[in-house]
Image (spheres, rainbow, N blue to C red):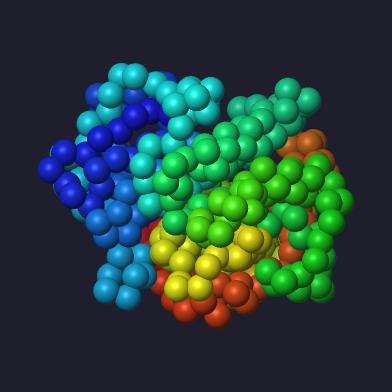
Length: 352
């Protein structure tokens, strides 16, 4: 569902839309956390942001400096200017009413892959696909049908398209074909975002493939911190598997970077792809030991792969027990500068 949002007394963000769970639409929740809707934007521009993940709640305030680089601060002043109406816009209504006027569109919607409260079954798998593919189709169709489409259209998908390997390295130029459930999901997801050629001539298409998103209050870290604090942390599986990751504020910065208007030359009919990962290449073992070191806790209790398979289902556990060496080649070439390019700086910021 998509909650309609308006900003009062702010020229640079006159309208933001984003789907939220209906249980979130309470005065308490909005008063405490509404500032994350300031999320991803460029100065004095309207953005259509379609999030249903924790990650935007983690980013309380994102703006751009003179160079257009994303900056994250902890200011909560923006919450005073947010108003959430009680009306909800369903996906079908988006298709029938069209996309509100905006200069950029971002889609981050999707059922949480690592939801510990959901058993790995066909119903869950169906939700993983529909929550990503269907919402992306709805947004891309709305963009295509708009009389004034946005100049930038950004989809955030994932690195599951790259086949796990201990040795292979993947850049945005690496060719790939689906090989399992999650890679098929990424294939359908990204295909759903493609715009017709006539629209792609004026709207820049960008796909960002993030690794594990590390932040204080959500994603992978939310479930890891407590056991690590208690000294119960350890490697997953062999620990040798690559662990592509990115700090949440750097992912926000890449999205802001991707939302910049296209250059004077017309956009390509094919999407630009950015690997949303840190430039550091790490294994699960290295991540585990560094998190333990930053916390000052031992990490001596490994979790065998068969236990992960039993708890999560083998198709889902592969995200944790296997991995890929993903290189952000095009991200770096585009001029983006990371705030947290290495594990030590990222984990210290999160823990402290």
